[in-house]
Length: 81
Image (cartoon, rainbow, N blue to C red):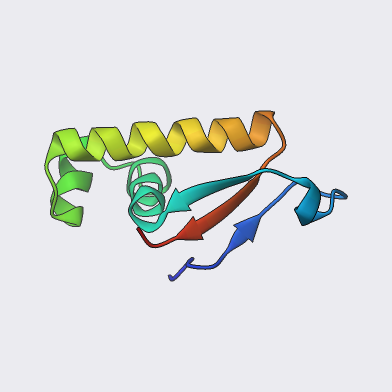
C-alpha cells in the first residue's frame, strides 16, 4: 500500500495551525513490519534489504516522531527521502 502524500492530524485543529512531522517512506515500512506484522528486527531488515542496525535506527526514529506527533498534537506527513 502506498502511503506517500498521506497526512494524519489531530481533529478539529486546522492543518495550517499545526507543526508537521515528516515520516519517511522507509520509516513507515519499518513501522509496518515491526509493529503491524510483528516481525523481529532481523526479519524486518531482511525484507527491506538493509542491515539490522539500519533497521533499528529507522524504527527508533519512526517511533520518536510518532510519539512526538501524538503527544504534542502535530501533523504527520509521509514522504519519500
